[in-house]
Image 1: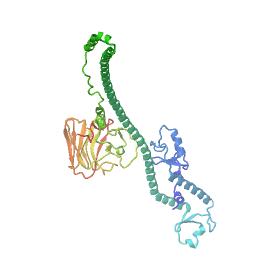
Image 2: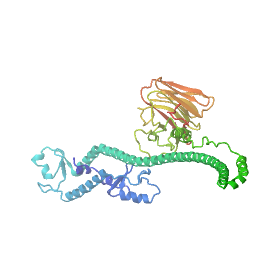
Image 3: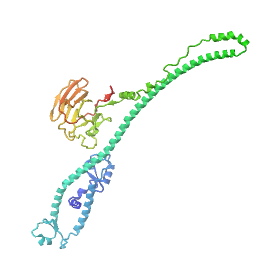
Image 4: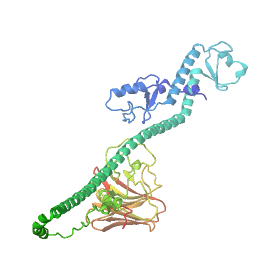
Length: 472
């Protein structure tokens, strides 16, 4: 079946722009799957404060929606067929008998005139008037075309989502570059300040030791001058004639003997710069001090898994609930449960992390299996401690929730996973109280998760000053 035959089953309304009511010209498609003439949509948006769909009013994040090439081709084929049909109807005469075509042969599925109907070729055939046959066949073709239309909508929606994903990738890259530069800016500032402190300490030592050497040198110069003057005066006496020498002998001897001889000068101990103190293990010492400046968070949240209503902090350690964001509907993203996964999962060993919780609205912390479907309600593969409607509950579908009481509302929840032993426990670290323990044979990778309906952030607590590879 050709494109022209396919288009014949459409009404002109199917190819009409909702804005100008004319056949589409350069059609574009929005994420809501509604299509418009490119010019009509841009003119519509110029008169509106937001880029909303003229039909359903959904706000579009794409300022340049993708072109709907499939619809454009159909419109062109429709216009071409309409022109051909108008020309044919003006000359709708039987090629055999030059009679006006008024009937449709159901057996041959072809148009005929009244002479053809009575001919031997159409003996005992069934006929319908042209308008009735055309109406019936249009309806049939419309029904045949329904799955094609639905398939086209699916492709258009996925294509629009891919375009949105491409735009979001660019936004993510820009945001990530900004955060990387900000982090390195802080590190550079720390290193620069540390460099200045260490150079200042070196300069101070240089100043003190240079002053000590200056004072020592000045003292030596004074003593040297006194000795040199006595020696020079005595040597002058030795060079005079014998009579003068003998007359001044007693005075010369007295002058030499009365000069107090100082102790032998000693070299100054530890006078040189202590290079070892300034350079020894310099990189390690700076790194060791940097541990007080940086922190390590055992769980980093994955923004690609976050429900559209969740807003993550810049360092990806906190999450709060807010207005819905326009985000790609990627397979990893939750679309029903307001939660977000950790960027890394565990399939062995023991792991602990703490979450700072606020008790004014619902929240949940726990783990989810890697295979859990992110679309719709979670049916299984989740173990969590939740605060729901003013009650603390365990959550582990398909098992029913279990409500339990606490003496004091915990401000933090410590989650401890022992994967190999099949234990998942929840603690109040401030009172060292065990709240609940799940026991299960875990068979696949588990990802920490948090969920919240709070506007105030639920944060993963950092291990301040500690790194996972700190040397003992």
